[in-house]
Image 1 (cartoon, rainbow, N blue to C red):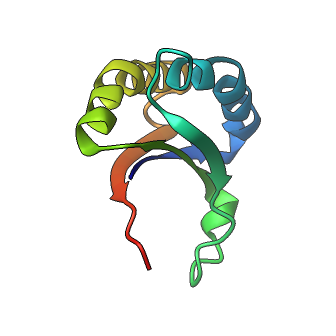
Image 2: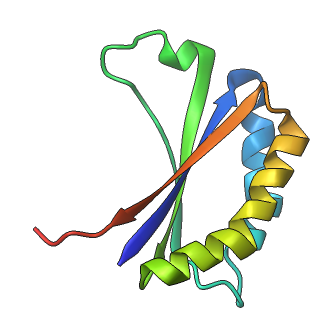
Length: 109
């Protein structure tokens, strides 16, 4: 299993607007009946150990969804994620809203 992780770094001044956008617009674009994304979750980075100033400046949200294999995850990103990231930058501005992506592979313990 693969987990596509999208970390959104959001200026504190737009935190509530970001959450409203994610819940009302972005989520339905990322995960829907046609989308292969499963088990979506949104988490907030609660603390960066060693950086007590982090939360005063910005917050980071991590959106994650699961996929059965790497090709499916990559195709989802092309079709579903890229338009959402474009909308994110357009809506909030590149100087106040940044993002980066990673693909994680589940490893059994």
